[in-house]
Image 1 (cartoon, rainbow, N blue to C red):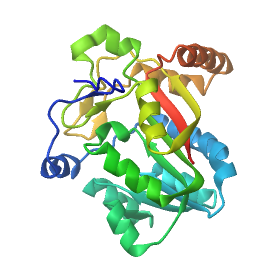
Image 2: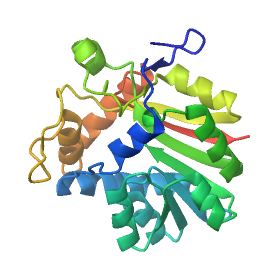
Image 3: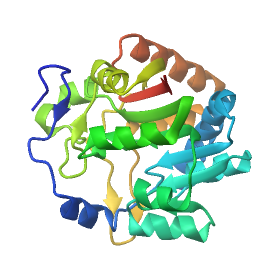
Image 4: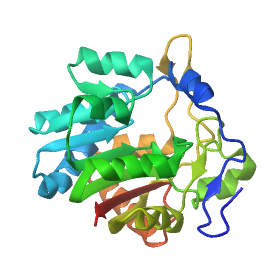
Length: 263
């Protein structure tokens, strides 16, 4: 289904909170070591971009997983906090001495903080109540603070190719399917201005294969292969950047990356 006003595509069936809690309580976070290294490097580059917004020195990662980004931000001197629903990931974060809570309400009961930066990596598409979540996060973010997010772009060649078999269409995991225009609509309505918006990456893999019994990844997506190889080759890195420039120009890259500033 889609909204006739903003063109946001969404699941017709919205899962109940109990169903979502059950689904994410044991949610797996698999990252091959070479992919994790590439992700960490991209996080370091992002932290440089977010540095101008550091005033209170407080950063929140909403849907922080096992805390990879929080650890990188902590190394740069940020006071870091996270929100994470998965019990497995929450335990892993606590093992690393990261301050992570299950809900925004729980965080607010312990801290009265206005954050300089809030991040959401591949999270917003999972939300069953996007308006209430954005309202809560907006309250936590200081004026002129930055909210950075990534989310799958529904307007991409992989989705056109696979159509109804597009692997990102997955209940109850992915409930919202954004394009550049629909994501901008929601954030502008919530009191933000867009600082930048890019679409990067291309992936014609049907789906990444996971060996559930061994908790290992047995294959990489096309985009992950390009990401890893480009960081080892100057020529491949140049080609990747050129492709991403074109994908972003036409707004058809597989991933939307956007930074919004609270007015």
